[in-house]
Amino acid sequence: MTFNLKSTEDKIARYTMRKNLYITALLFISGSSVLWAQEKDKNKEKEEEGIGTEVVNVVKPYTPTISDANKIQETPSLNDSITTTRKNIEYNIFSVPVASTFTPAKGKATGLKKAAKERLYNSYLSLGLGNYNTAMLDFYTSRDFSRDESLDIMLNHHSSQGGIDNVVLDDKFFNTSLEAYYRKRDRYMSWGLNGGFQHQIYNWYGLPEGVYSDAAIGSIDEKQSYYTGFIGGNLEFEESYFTGGEVYYRRFWDAYSSGENRAVLKPKFQFPVGEELVSLDVAVDYVGGSFDRIYGNANTDINYSNLFAGVKPSIQIVSDGLTLNLGASIVYNQDLENSDGDFFFYPNVDVSYDIVDEFVTAYGGVDGSLQQNSYYQFAQENPYVSPTLNIMPTDQQYNAFAGIKGRFLPNVGYNLKGSYIVENNKYMYKSNSIYTGQDSQIVNNEGYAYGNSFGMVYDDITTISVYGEVNADINRNFSLGANAEFIDYSTDNEEEAWNLPTIKGTLFADYKYGKWSAGAHLFYVGERHDRIDSPILLDPETVSLDGYFDINANIGYDITNQWSAFIRANNIANNQYNRLVFYPVQGFQILAGAAYKFDL
Image 1 (cartoon, rainbow, N blue to C red):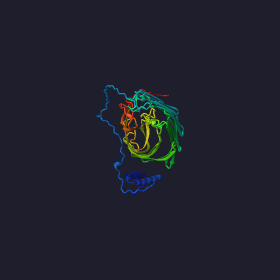
Image 2: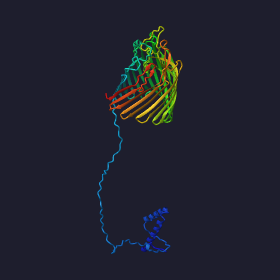
Image 3: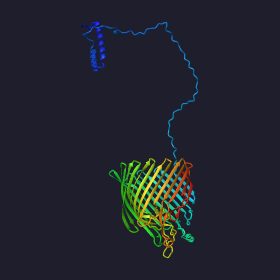
């Protein structure tokens, strides 16, 4: 059947048919989006061309239904006598007032409390007095002229008027020193100068018992005085092959016309070799002095003069927990007094490896050195030596060592070390003989010639030692530790390693709480041996000195920021042991004092 759309009825039929087509297209839009786009484009083209005349073939006649009609959307009005009117309801709340004490607090950020900054003073003075008429003084001051320039001055004094039981000679001592240090720092260089003076008085009070009469004892002048003056300087460079060095001169003399000069020059260099730095230390060391006599003859003096000149190249290699130091020393020693010289070569090698980082580190090495001995060194170690010494250097051929160190716990450290040392001309202190001549007359009647002083003997000695230590920081205020060393000596010529202990040990603890501080130190020195030799008055014999414990403690209290008080106790066990043969020490000692900090 064919319709012509030019008439009005045809237009209605065409409109109805197009509506059906749109409904059909909407049903299939989800399955054919491409088809929809193409159809849309075609319709758009037709709309742009305008409405024209078309011929549509309908295969089924149009049958209108009620669903095609538009429904009237109308809300019916209600007019029912049963419907009641809406009543207004009033609500009354029965409220009872309740008292409330809640007050909201304003928020505040929590912060860390800063400790009050401690004021630093540039000067310090400490005074103390104790039994045995002991006096102690320490003074220190530091003056900053600018950021890079300062001067430090130190004064120390320690003396006692003696009073040891059963000692018939004067046993007082006196030790006073004054030292100053000046520092200056520039952009590429820093340097310093230091100098000082020291005065010491000791007495040879270690007299053998039952040997001399009261008249002979009364004639002994047992006093010895030591004097030391020194001056030195140091220099450091940055970004230079010459990294710095030091120079030092010391004059040492005593009340018996003995004198000694010591001069040291030590420049240091550093050169790059590939990716590593090679250090080169140069040392020139001179010692020369004289004594007015040998121990047994007043007509023969002693002169000594030794000059060292040496170089020590070294390089350090660090890689993956391994630290290796490789070096060697070449030293030339000229005995100027005897016109004799010789070269010495020493290895300087050590290595360490972190097996477990910070907890287990293994280390070992071998080194050696030519050690310059001096009268000043011996007098500081043993002030009761006689001014009749033979001074010569010690050749430490090598010191081979190996050990392990680290931590048991984060706050507990340990170190265990074994050593094997070979030395030529190692010095030892040995008691001087009560010397008499063939006519039974005392050849040397000075205050040190009554068997109450010590001389020097030298021997080739091999030393084997085992050393161990443990340190623990219990907390920030409490620490303690202990160490011990077991030593075995093998001598070539002497019967014993005179006055050298075979066991040494130390136990210490330090505690601080608030304004209080305290500490305790216990040390042990094992058995030693000495030789008493006199052809007439005493039979030659080897004596053994018993080992001894010495317990020391101290306590302090900060009264104010500037004032503090302290008490120190030494030899608390009151063990009047012999540190050297015929030389008993003071018994229980206590000293109390105060310290003051201030600005000068």
